[in-house]
Image 1 (cartoon, helix red, strand yellow):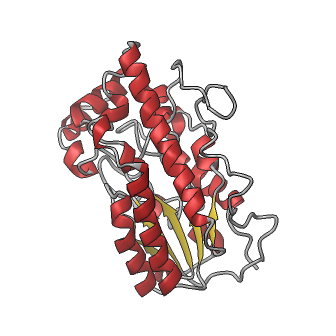
Image 2 (tube, helix red, strand yellow):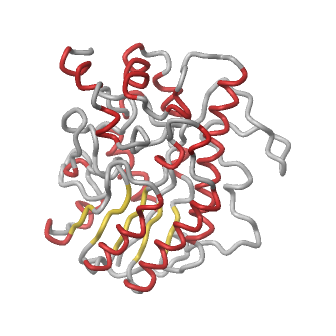
Length: 313
Protein backbone atom coordinates (compact mmCIF):
# COMPACT_ATOMS: atom_id res chain seq x y z
CA UNK A 1 0.00 0.00 0.00
CA UNK A 2 1.18 3.54 -0.70
CA UNK A 3 2.36 5.56 2.28
CA UNK A 4 2.81 9.31 2.60
CA UNK A 5 6.57 8.81 2.65
CA UNK A 6 6.54 6.75 -0.52
CA UNK A 7 4.32 9.19 -2.42
CA UNK A 8 6.53 12.11 -1.36
CA UNK A 9 9.61 10.21 -2.43
CA UNK A 10 8.18 9.81 -5.92
CA UNK A 11 8.70 13.51 -6.54
CA UNK A 12 12.46 12.93 -6.59
CA UNK A 13 12.47 9.63 -8.45
CA UNK A 14 13.44 11.04 -11.85
CA UNK A 15 16.69 12.53 -10.61
CA UNK A 16 17.52 9.40 -8.62
CA UNK A 17 16.93 7.13 -11.58
CA UNK A 18 18.86 9.26 -14.04
CA UNK A 19 17.71 11.29 -17.01
CA UNK A 20 16.17 8.24 -18.67
CA UNK A 21 13.74 7.54 -15.83
CA UNK A 22 15.11 4.22 -14.72
CA UNK A 23 17.64 1.49 -15.04
CA UNK A 24 15.31 -1.24 -16.15
CA UNK A 25 13.16 -1.79 -19.16
CA UNK A 26 9.71 -3.13 -19.45
CA UNK A 27 8.39 -5.95 -21.67
CA UNK A 28 6.08 -6.50 -24.56
CA UNK A 29 2.70 -4.89 -24.60
CA UNK A 30 -0.05 -7.47 -24.31
CA UNK A 31 -3.06 -6.80 -26.48
CA UNK A 32 -1.05 -5.01 -29.15
CA UNK A 33 -0.91 -5.84 -32.82
CA UNK A 34 2.82 -6.25 -33.44
CA UNK A 35 4.19 -6.06 -36.93
CA UNK A 36 4.58 -9.36 -38.72
CA UNK A 37 7.97 -11.01 -38.73
CA UNK A 38 9.06 -10.69 -42.39
CA UNK A 39 10.73 -14.11 -42.33
CA UNK A 40 7.77 -16.01 -40.92
CA UNK A 41 4.71 -13.88 -41.64
CA UNK A 42 3.78 -14.23 -37.99
CA UNK A 43 3.33 -11.43 -35.50
CA UNK A 44 5.91 -11.01 -32.79
CA UNK A 45 4.53 -11.86 -29.36
CA UNK A 46 5.47 -10.61 -25.90
CA UNK A 47 8.64 -12.30 -24.75
CA UNK A 48 9.30 -14.05 -28.07
CA UNK A 49 12.35 -13.10 -30.18
CA UNK A 50 11.70 -11.93 -33.73
CA UNK A 51 13.81 -13.09 -36.67
CA UNK A 52 16.32 -10.31 -36.02
CA UNK A 53 16.86 -11.76 -32.53
CA UNK A 54 17.20 -15.36 -33.66
CA UNK A 55 20.69 -16.36 -34.82
CA UNK A 56 21.21 -16.67 -38.57
CA UNK A 57 22.43 -20.06 -39.69
CA UNK A 58 25.42 -18.32 -41.27
CA UNK A 59 26.20 -16.05 -38.33
CA UNK A 60 28.95 -17.00 -35.90
CA UNK A 61 27.43 -18.24 -32.68
CA UNK A 62 28.91 -17.79 -29.22
CA UNK A 63 29.91 -20.83 -27.23
CA UNK A 64 26.96 -22.67 -25.74
CA UNK A 65 26.99 -24.38 -22.34
CA UNK A 66 26.90 -27.73 -24.11
CA UNK A 67 29.86 -27.15 -26.40
CA UNK A 68 32.14 -24.66 -24.65
CA UNK A 69 35.42 -25.67 -23.11
CA UNK A 70 34.99 -25.73 -19.35
CA UNK A 71 36.90 -22.73 -17.97
CA UNK A 72 38.68 -22.65 -14.63
CA UNK A 73 36.67 -21.17 -11.78
CA UNK A 74 37.36 -17.41 -11.68
CA UNK A 75 39.07 -15.85 -8.68
CA UNK A 76 37.49 -12.44 -9.21
CA UNK A 77 34.56 -10.85 -11.03
CA UNK A 78 33.17 -7.50 -12.08
CA UNK A 79 29.55 -6.66 -12.91
CA UNK A 80 28.82 -3.95 -15.48
CA UNK A 81 25.47 -2.36 -16.19
CA UNK A 82 22.80 -0.11 -14.75
CA UNK A 83 20.38 0.07 -11.83
CA UNK A 84 19.26 -3.54 -12.24
CA UNK A 85 22.77 -4.70 -11.39
CA UNK A 86 22.98 -2.11 -8.61
CA UNK A 87 19.98 -3.73 -6.90
CA UNK A 88 18.08 -0.45 -7.04
CA UNK A 89 14.88 -0.37 -4.94
CA UNK A 90 15.44 -3.76 -3.29
CA UNK A 91 16.37 -2.53 0.22
CA UNK A 92 14.78 0.92 0.46
CA UNK A 93 12.99 3.33 -1.90
CA UNK A 94 15.09 5.07 -4.51
CA UNK A 95 18.39 3.63 -3.29
CA UNK A 96 20.99 1.27 -4.73
CA UNK A 97 21.47 -1.97 -2.80
CA UNK A 98 24.37 -3.99 -4.29
CA UNK A 99 23.95 -6.60 -1.53
CA UNK A 100 20.81 -7.73 -3.38
CA UNK A 101 22.32 -7.63 -6.86
CA UNK A 102 21.76 -10.71 -9.06
CA UNK A 103 25.43 -10.52 -10.07
CA UNK A 104 27.47 -9.49 -7.02
CA UNK A 105 25.08 -9.57 -4.07
CA UNK A 106 25.98 -11.10 -0.72
CA UNK A 107 22.37 -11.84 0.24
CA UNK A 108 21.38 -15.48 0.63
CA UNK A 109 17.90 -14.46 -0.58
CA UNK A 110 19.29 -13.70 -4.03
CA UNK A 111 22.11 -16.27 -4.34
CA UNK A 112 24.05 -14.14 -6.82
CA UNK A 113 26.73 -15.25 -9.26
CA UNK A 114 29.43 -14.10 -6.85
CA UNK A 115 27.87 -16.07 -4.01
CA UNK A 116 27.52 -19.21 -6.14
CA UNK A 117 31.21 -18.89 -7.01
CA UNK A 118 32.14 -18.47 -3.35
CA UNK A 119 34.21 -15.37 -4.09
CA UNK A 120 35.47 -13.21 -1.21
CA UNK A 121 34.00 -9.71 -1.08
CA UNK A 122 37.36 -8.11 -1.88
CA UNK A 123 37.43 -9.98 -5.20
CA UNK A 124 33.98 -8.84 -6.32
CA UNK A 125 33.39 -5.48 -8.00
CA UNK A 126 30.07 -3.88 -8.90
CA UNK A 127 30.97 -1.27 -11.50
CA UNK A 128 27.39 -0.72 -12.69
CA UNK A 129 25.80 2.70 -12.33
CA UNK A 130 22.14 3.61 -11.94
CA UNK A 131 20.97 5.42 -15.07
CA UNK A 132 23.81 4.09 -17.24
CA UNK A 133 23.38 3.54 -20.97
CA UNK A 134 25.46 1.67 -23.50
CA UNK A 135 27.57 4.81 -24.00
CA UNK A 136 28.83 4.33 -20.42
CA UNK A 137 29.86 0.69 -20.79
CA UNK A 138 33.39 1.28 -22.10
CA UNK A 139 34.23 3.27 -18.98
CA UNK A 140 32.92 0.49 -16.77
CA UNK A 141 34.91 -2.02 -18.82
CA UNK A 142 38.08 -0.06 -18.18
CA UNK A 143 37.38 -0.27 -14.45
CA UNK A 144 37.03 -4.07 -14.76
CA UNK A 145 40.38 -4.19 -16.56
CA UNK A 146 42.02 -2.22 -13.75
CA UNK A 147 40.47 -4.67 -11.27
CA UNK A 148 41.87 -7.63 -13.25
CA UNK A 149 38.51 -9.37 -13.19
CA UNK A 150 38.51 -12.94 -14.44
CA UNK A 151 34.74 -13.03 -14.94
CA UNK A 152 32.60 -10.13 -16.18
CA UNK A 153 28.82 -9.87 -16.41
CA UNK A 154 27.11 -7.28 -18.60
CA UNK A 155 23.45 -6.24 -18.43
CA UNK A 156 22.84 -2.84 -19.99
CA UNK A 157 20.55 -1.22 -22.54
CA UNK A 158 17.20 -0.72 -20.83
CA UNK A 159 17.93 2.98 -20.42
CA UNK A 160 18.73 3.28 -24.11
CA UNK A 161 15.09 2.42 -24.83
CA UNK A 162 13.45 3.81 -21.68
CA UNK A 163 13.63 7.46 -22.58
CA UNK A 164 11.23 10.31 -21.95
CA UNK A 165 10.15 10.14 -25.59
CA UNK A 166 10.36 7.55 -28.33
CA UNK A 167 12.56 9.68 -30.59
CA UNK A 168 15.23 9.86 -27.86
CA UNK A 169 15.96 6.12 -27.97
CA UNK A 170 19.49 5.10 -28.97
CA UNK A 171 19.65 3.85 -32.54
CA UNK A 172 20.57 0.17 -33.00
CA UNK A 173 23.66 1.11 -35.02
CA UNK A 174 24.94 3.46 -32.30
CA UNK A 175 24.16 0.86 -29.65
CA UNK A 176 26.13 -1.73 -31.62
CA UNK A 177 29.12 0.56 -32.12
CA UNK A 178 29.25 1.44 -28.42
CA UNK A 179 29.03 -2.20 -27.42
CA UNK A 180 31.83 -3.14 -29.81
CA UNK A 181 34.04 -0.47 -28.26
CA UNK A 182 33.33 -1.71 -24.72
CA UNK A 183 33.87 -5.36 -25.60
CA UNK A 184 37.16 -4.48 -27.29
CA UNK A 185 38.31 -2.86 -24.04
CA UNK A 186 37.70 -6.16 -22.27
CA UNK A 187 39.14 -8.26 -25.07
CA UNK A 188 42.36 -6.24 -25.08
CA UNK A 189 42.73 -5.69 -21.35
CA UNK A 190 41.38 -9.02 -20.09
CA UNK A 191 42.09 -11.48 -22.92
CA UNK A 192 41.59 -14.54 -20.72
CA UNK A 193 38.49 -13.35 -18.86
CA UNK A 194 35.07 -14.91 -19.46
CA UNK A 195 32.24 -12.52 -20.26
CA UNK A 196 28.53 -13.19 -19.85
CA UNK A 197 26.26 -10.82 -21.77
CA UNK A 198 22.68 -10.80 -20.50
CA UNK A 199 19.75 -9.88 -22.74
CA UNK A 200 17.69 -6.80 -21.88
CA UNK A 201 14.37 -7.67 -20.19
CA UNK A 202 11.30 -7.47 -22.44
CA UNK A 203 10.35 -3.83 -22.14
CA UNK A 204 6.60 -4.16 -22.47
CA UNK A 205 6.46 -6.53 -19.50
CA UNK A 206 6.43 -3.70 -16.95
CA UNK A 207 3.51 -2.15 -18.81
CA UNK A 208 1.71 -5.48 -18.79
CA UNK A 209 2.43 -6.03 -15.10
CA UNK A 210 1.47 -2.61 -13.79
CA UNK A 211 -0.82 -0.74 -16.15
CA UNK A 212 -3.91 -1.88 -14.20
CA UNK A 213 -2.40 -0.86 -10.83
CA UNK A 214 -3.27 2.65 -9.63
CA UNK A 215 -0.04 3.07 -7.66
CA UNK A 216 2.07 1.92 -10.60
CA UNK A 217 0.40 4.39 -12.94
CA UNK A 218 0.87 7.16 -10.38
CA UNK A 219 4.58 6.41 -9.94
CA UNK A 220 5.19 6.21 -13.66
CA UNK A 221 3.42 9.51 -14.28
CA UNK A 222 4.80 11.55 -11.35
CA UNK A 223 8.37 10.30 -11.82
CA UNK A 224 8.32 10.21 -15.62
CA UNK A 225 9.41 6.57 -15.67
CA UNK A 226 10.17 5.18 -19.13
CA UNK A 227 7.60 7.37 -20.82
CA UNK A 228 8.52 6.05 -24.26
CA UNK A 229 6.75 2.87 -23.11
CA UNK A 230 4.67 3.86 -20.09
CA UNK A 231 3.09 7.18 -21.03
CA UNK A 232 -0.73 7.00 -20.93
CA UNK A 233 -0.56 3.33 -19.88
CA UNK A 234 -4.29 2.61 -20.06
CA UNK A 235 -4.74 3.98 -23.55
CA UNK A 236 -5.86 1.52 -26.20
CA UNK A 237 -5.63 4.03 -29.04
CA UNK A 238 -3.70 2.78 -32.07
CA UNK A 239 -0.97 5.40 -31.64
CA UNK A 240 -0.28 4.30 -28.05
CA UNK A 241 -0.41 0.61 -28.91
CA UNK A 242 1.95 1.09 -31.87
CA UNK A 243 4.34 3.21 -29.80
CA UNK A 244 4.66 0.49 -27.16
CA UNK A 245 5.38 -2.08 -29.84
CA UNK A 246 8.05 0.10 -31.42
CA UNK A 247 9.83 0.47 -28.08
CA UNK A 248 9.70 -3.28 -27.57
CA UNK A 249 11.03 -3.80 -31.09
CA UNK A 250 13.94 -1.49 -30.30
CA UNK A 251 14.88 -3.68 -27.35
CA UNK A 252 14.66 -6.73 -29.61
CA UNK A 253 17.05 -5.00 -32.01
CA UNK A 254 19.45 -4.21 -29.16
CA UNK A 255 19.46 -7.83 -28.05
CA UNK A 256 20.25 -8.95 -31.59
CA UNK A 257 23.25 -6.62 -31.57
CA UNK A 258 24.41 -8.02 -28.22
CA UNK A 259 24.28 -11.55 -29.63
CA UNK A 260 26.04 -10.65 -32.89
CA UNK A 261 28.88 -8.69 -31.31
CA UNK A 262 29.39 -11.16 -28.47
CA UNK A 263 29.65 -14.04 -30.95
CA UNK A 264 32.81 -12.48 -32.42
CA UNK A 265 34.84 -13.44 -29.32
CA UNK A 266 35.05 -17.01 -28.07
CA UNK A 267 35.36 -15.81 -24.45
CA UNK A 268 32.02 -14.00 -24.66
CA UNK A 269 28.71 -15.77 -24.10
CA UNK A 270 25.25 -14.33 -24.76
CA UNK A 271 22.43 -15.68 -22.58
CA UNK A 272 20.42 -16.77 -25.61
CA UNK A 273 17.67 -14.28 -24.78
CA UNK A 274 16.54 -16.08 -21.62
CA UNK A 275 16.17 -12.88 -19.59
CA UNK A 276 14.27 -11.19 -22.40
CA UNK A 277 11.82 -14.09 -22.57
CA UNK A 278 11.50 -14.52 -18.79
CA UNK A 279 7.98 -13.60 -17.70
CA UNK A 280 8.56 -11.64 -14.52
CA UNK A 281 5.41 -11.39 -12.40
CA UNK A 282 4.15 -8.77 -9.96
CA UNK A 283 6.12 -10.26 -7.08
CA UNK A 284 9.29 -9.88 -9.15
CA UNK A 285 8.84 -6.10 -9.42
CA UNK A 286 9.56 -3.55 -6.70
CA UNK A 287 6.30 -2.13 -5.37
CA UNK A 288 8.07 1.12 -4.59
CA UNK A 289 8.38 2.06 -8.24
CA UNK A 290 6.73 -0.85 -10.13
CA UNK A 291 9.67 -0.92 -12.45
CA UNK A 292 12.90 -2.35 -11.01
CA UNK A 293 13.30 -5.98 -9.90
CA UNK A 294 12.31 -6.82 -6.34
CA UNK A 295 14.41 -9.22 -4.27
CA UNK A 296 12.40 -12.02 -5.89
CA UNK A 297 13.15 -10.57 -9.32
CA UNK A 298 16.85 -10.35 -8.54
CA UNK A 299 16.79 -13.98 -7.39
CA UNK A 300 15.12 -14.99 -10.65
CA UNK A 301 17.74 -13.10 -12.65
CA UNK A 302 20.53 -14.84 -10.75
CA UNK A 303 18.96 -18.23 -11.34
CA UNK A 304 18.17 -18.00 -15.06
CA UNK A 305 21.47 -16.35 -15.96
CA UNK A 306 23.45 -18.89 -13.94
CA UNK A 307 21.75 -21.76 -15.78
CA UNK A 308 22.57 -20.19 -19.13
CA UNK A 309 26.03 -19.06 -18.13
CA UNK A 310 29.30 -20.88 -17.63
CA UNK A 311 29.97 -24.26 -16.09
CA UNK A 312 33.18 -23.74 -14.17
CA UNK A 313 35.92 -26.29 -13.75
